[in-house]
Length: 409
Picture (spheres, rainbow, N blue to C red):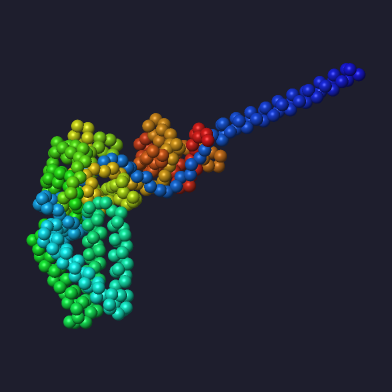
């Protein structure tokens, strides 16, 4: 009886041990499969493009014309910051006795005109109600402004709306009426102010800025392409270290400027060619737009490359900029996009492994251009393969599945 119990116990134990061993074998097999077979990932070839890009700093060289003003008298801006002014257009006015007298007379006439407006038929009020709403909104916005230049811009906008309002009233008012008389007086005052010696006019057309940093005379714009590396380094050093920002008035040519770039000689050198167009994107702008730039001059010296690009648009983006981060797209190629993880170099030749029908086929390829993750790949011609001593009829095509070794999640 005892022997029967022992046999039964032995059989039960054996069943348990066999079950455990089978489980271990199954788990081990799964681990081996996952670590070996499942490590072979693939990549699908697609059509696309790859750019060769460098992040750098640009130094903005502009044609600037500083307007000499009397520092003992406050100059009141008339044209908004960053806006274009025509040659001989009034950009600012001296805040002297003549200015104060003009402002006082205009304010008095405006009050008298407004008093008469309140007595006009409602049709008049409806015609100008939109302008009154805009004026109220501007006044409300200006209450939180602390910048002198911005406050003056608000004031100028209000004055423009007032002038528009009065012009409409003048057209609607009967000839010989009191309101027409006051409007005509105001128009004469306004015209006289435009011819006043009190005005500061733009000597040339261009963008207006009221920021002066003391570097305006550092360069001669017309001689930039003749500068040597010593002069270019002087510009770079002074532009990089300058933090001055004073009030002043200057006009900047809005049709042209140069971007100066200094970089260590590197792999981008092969793409640098004078006269060629490149795309440059300013990094501190909230836009993906890039500017077309022409490389006017390139100088190699002491391990550095000095590149001078000409820009003919978007000068307003760099109106008050001396130095800023930028991204230069040196070249862009389109074709078959391949993951760099799928490329293997054997004896100086790049290969990819095609996975098809359970077979692995090595294909020699040329890497045309690459970034950190992918490249543009091309097939060798038959003549090129013969010169390399390679025998292969396989070619890389779109939608091919390529082997990527040792890619474990």
